[in-house]
Image (cartoon, rainbow, N blue to C red; front, top):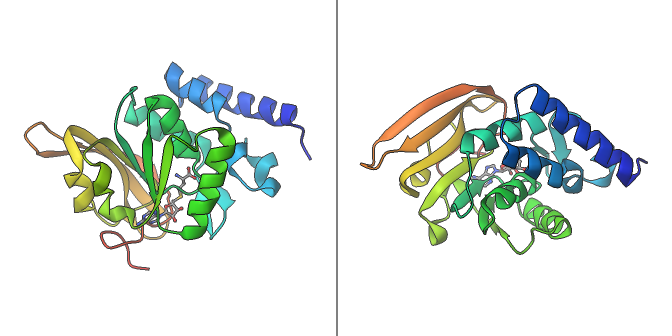
Length: 221
Ligand code: SAM
């Protein structure tokens, strides 16, 4: 088993590589990634692989995304302190913790699998974000109207189309980051902006591979 020091060292080297490669571009994203290592959000048997830049298994047959993918989405999000953020697809809770670190306020994250709600809550508590990240059990394709509207909604599962409730729950000028494409692990990552007049602008970032977004406005199971 790797010591905490070895885990920390490997994690730091991965983040330094992502900075050198230009994947991690901004100081806040770099600092957040250094502060919140992925090994705190995986089961014990995967801790030694947390620094490998690939997705890792989490309970219920789901995955925690590869560090480069999380970094890309956080850079696209360009988060600022005080922003109201909804994440759809809590999984391990790692990305939600990173978001909370960047916005320095409460974050809401919806997960459809009860086992993962528990898993994420435990991880978040252990990492010191249990009081700021609110994990909600539910169908995130419907958003979370109780805290809407949001400056940004970040979806970490692949949708067949833009879920209308998510667009509706954006503030004017707000941003939706979402993979849209096929069920089987191939989507395009879109940055969708809602203009001040309520119009929708879509920008395609590139190809990504996420597990499916399953729900009323997503894929059926
Ligand atoms: N952001 C996560 C992390 O940091 O570990 C990784 C997310 S994982 C790639 C995608 C997650 O989306 C899975 O946990 C899956 O159960 C969840 N999911 C799929 N459809 C959903 C829906 N309609 N509402 C909420 N969560 C959903």
